[in-house]
Image 1: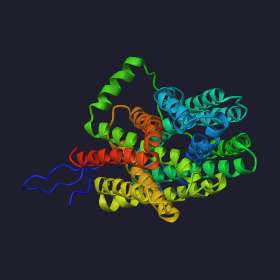
Image 2 (image 1 turned 90 degrees about the vertical axis):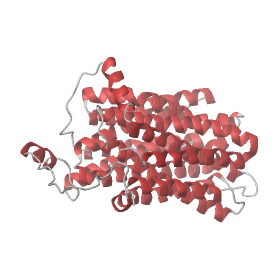
Image 3 (image 1 turned 60 degrees about the vertical axis):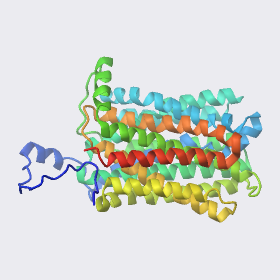
Length: 422
């Protein structure tokens, strides 16, 4: 059974060989990295968990409130989704510039600055006078927030020992899951008893505390070397990065996984607020507690890779997303909720596998490769997340499910292809 797409075919008559011995400098570098079980490793993991928490909390807190925004500003569901898409597309645009800046001034300063400024723009959005002003504040939030996801993967790859990287990546992504859960749930709960503006003020206050903890806990980079980056160098490295067939497929996988995931949650609120469910904002927020599944899935993904390999694990997660999507069409609320939970599990575990795979593949500029992956990831959230709103207008939830099902079938083909890329 083939368990890893990075494996090469064995020769007809394999010849036993000893593994290459590590040189003394290599052993010294590895020993200096963060290893599982050490106090510094735990502090770094907690800091990155909090960074991931803040990223998704700030980015997606308005998602369950889109029906309220549509009602308040007289918008269609597709236009209301701009409250999320404006932030994600701006974030996607800023990822590579943020990675370049981090190559010059360091990983930690960029990540701390990103969290600080995005907290400010969350507060600004709370006082927006109209939907256009809200979109501007959300776009500015996305531009500044880009500094954390663009750099976090590079920090992980540079500072953590290879044997501890997958687990640390899983914890970082579980922070994304918990942040997305808390941001959505608290926003919905507060909006029901006050309004969405008060919800944003409260979440900005929470983000301030998270930012301070991140700054205090995250160890400084030990293996970062500042470099002066020219535009020509970036373009050259980008060409070399896209020359890697495996990376191209992983970029496409990130685009599709995140696009389908964001779309499902974008329009889930519109389905649940309408008959036969007719749920309140707080009740819809309770459904978003399914993000807890993502915390388990992100960490379990690394263990599944260790046991079954990347390709088998990724294939299984795409299949789970398809199964969960099919169940979400059911008119019974319990079946729908279970289906969304299965879909959520498949997404977070699949994203954890794909993201760590990007970090493990050789690349001329690792931070750039990570930034391109995340750029595709958030462009997928913006484009598929908005365009699937047209499917909603055409045929409601059935239209959305059909659109996302097509995207996941393409993702399944990509996984099949990844199994043949060395």
